[in-house]
Image (cartoon, rainbow, N blue to C red):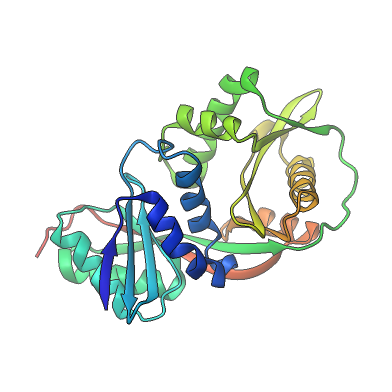
Length: 284
């Protein structure tokens, strides 16, 4: 097996898209990152780490990392490919805070990274990917959906920062840049009940599919059905625009979100894990 590292985003996109689309539901987050890089090469502040591992001309693994975020790995055809990726990162002196991907793949990578670096690891989050093909009707909720616009920037920055702190414990990206990117592709919507009460993103990530997220309702407006109403409305918009299905991620530690999305019509398809590497360990 051979590792190929890509500096050119277009070449990376051309090489990996067919492989990622073979298991689209497993790769929807990877597809979003790659499609973002294609639409806006300056969307992120740092050079991505973008690699494939191939055997006899066929891809067996894809990995990408946008520093300072975690490494993200694809569905793996041969788990030995993860040893090659870990070895490449280690050889080049890369430090990574963690890894995210399907359950078997992430645990395998975390074990190999510990072997190479001496860093221990711990399971930090568990996610479930859901897929929707048809929206199910829900109880009517007061308010309406509207696109976010430039005048909403201060509120969007505050809410997306709160969302990241709530879900990840800290902000993991430049929030102002993220808001600019969302507004540029017109992929953020508010649920408006006299005032904005919830925000939802929805982005087409492939010819067939869209990814819903982020989904955030300010604490004072929760448990009123706003998130359900906004996700339902945005999902229907994306289906009406030609997407065959929509995907979203939920934190398995949040039973409320897992319940409300299934009521809308989202069905579970696979689980993801995130491991965090402990920085207090010393390399071997």
